[in-house]
Image (cartoon, rainbow, N blue to C red):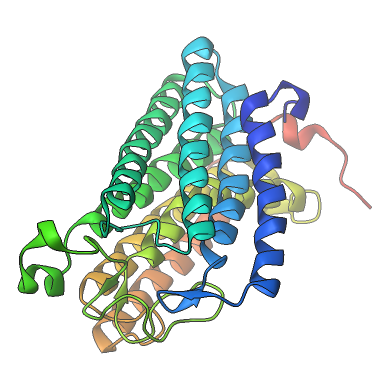
Length: 322
């Protein structure tokens, strides 16, 4: 892995700033007892800042993998920083004002802030897409690493795109009509109003569907799939099958397919107005099928193919750790 000193510096600096904001928000959670839409008012900046730390650090590393288009990638990274900064400034300003940041159209000022957030989110997504396209065109010697990076990015883009569903008027808002005079347009929850009973930590609804679940799970494929590959490489000295680059590639294929299926499943569950923690029989059956497919795929991946010789890479040239 390239030295962290070669990572995209603005993304690293922004991640450090978000870590500091996470600490400030954590203090706010303790000392500020205000509640907004059923959640502690500092919960949103805390969750967003922690998420941005992981998101931007991962992109900062991924940009070091580019073999061509580095200048375009560097500028795309700058755009991610700028748009993320605008979003966090608006979220924090609204917390200080005691107002909602998302979906808030109560006043002209609130509406302007929400519209600005909407535009920055679109630009941020487009900048991440540019980085993904550059990485799809980059030659990465280790095929498992290439798949982990590209698969994680593509699933993350799909997860981020699910956020656009939240900006659409909910069924209850459409039923009331006169959206121009509404205090809010859009919602996290499906089938129930925002701000009802919710899960601890995440704040996801326990009485209806919640689009934040697939949005969150999808976006963090960006970190989790590459981390899986790192774990496989670290375990390779102790587990002989993992020393084979072909085995690791097949395991990453299974992980990417299984993760994509999971995001699709919980998106479908949320759109049906079903809480994540209260799945019905159909959802459980689909989850069971995905789990069985992943388990079967992992078992098959660990078995050497007939007549196939183990493939070694630079990761495998080190002596096993005693």
